[in-house]
Structure formats: structure tokens, C-alpha cells
Image (tube, rainbow, N blue to C red):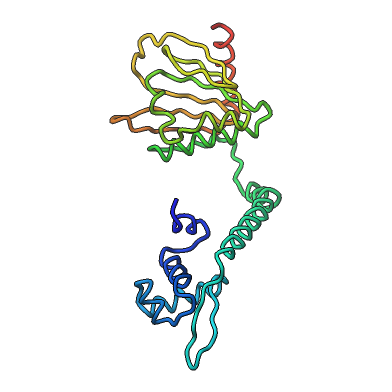
Length: 248
């Protein structure tokens, strides 16, 4: 990761980084010299310097009728990172204690299942993260899956460290594999059933009450998913899973 990628995490734009680095090189300089060193026009340089002044990473002093600027030491960036981290902690505490409970009270409780659709690798990654987050918060700290042989090499493509994250969060999984194969992993149990007539059909069903997710592959190995949030449906699927698990 280069300097610009790191500082982007602190909300610095590329041109702001260019000007800050130019000032570190120049020491103390006029707007004209800064613009020349950074390769940015003077008008834009002036606006960016105003932003950097507000953030405290640049300072100035008057020299005649003009201002000369200098960069604050790079340690200032670490101070900004620590401040942002503390602000995020405070925001997280407020979300957990106040904001999320208030927002949940606004949700309409119709009793009807909520159904969401996801597509592509980005969508599947969101579903996989939802499985981990929901299972981790559950009383059992676990979930169950049906997984066909045909989908296995595509399922974790957008989230290659999924199993590592699951184990790190101490989440257990029981898997009924449809078709042979599948890798053993910590905190997991696996049983197999013959794929019979389904052959190469790619499917993955995760049961993590109060939700269940169904992932499949469309033409061109394009993944799609449906997530149903319903305590009744997920519990019914879990009951059938438990029954089959005991018979295998």
C-alpha cells in the first residue's frame, strides 16, 4: 500500500497528498513554488492549502504581503489517525446503545418475511459476512449449510479468508455436502449425501436463524443469492436439517 492509499483512509485526496509532500520537500514556500513543485495550478493549490490548514497538517506565516506555508511533521498524521479511531469508537458505542435501537423501533413489524436479493461477487460477499455476523451474535454461535460440490470453488471467491474469519470468531458450522469432497476445517462437522440426479447443479443453503440464504450460479458462473429473514421459515429449515443430520 502506497502513501496515497494509506492517507486515503484518513480522507486525504491525492492532490492534498501531493501538496503535503511538496511542502515537506520545500520546507517553507509560497503558493507559487508549491504549485510548481506539485504540478497543480495555483488556484487549486490555494484551495487545497486552505483545507490542509483546517486539518492542521499545514501552517503559515506572513512574509511581506504574502503567506508562506510549511508542512507540519508527519507525526501529525498519526495524531489524526488516532483521533479518527477514537471518533469511530464513540460512534460505534452510540450506534449500539442509542441509534440502532431507535431505528429498529421505526421498522414496521408486519410479521411478513423480509426477502432480499444479491448478485455478483460483491453481493455474495455481503451475504457471507451477514452469515458470520448473525451467527456470532446468536445464542448457539453456529449455523448449518447444505453445499453442493459444483458451487464450492466459486462460493468463497469474493471472500477467500471466510473460513479463517469464521474460526477466529469461534463460529461453528455443520455442513451436509451434496456430492463428494469438501475440505475439513476447525469448528466444523461434515456429512455427505449422494448428489443423485442433481449432478452438477450448483447450490448453497445457509440456515442461520432468523435468516436463511440460498446461493446459486447462473449462466457464466454468475452468483446470485436470496436471503429470507423469517424466524418461522428458518426454524422449519433447521428442523428438517437436524432430522436429516441425525439420519446420516
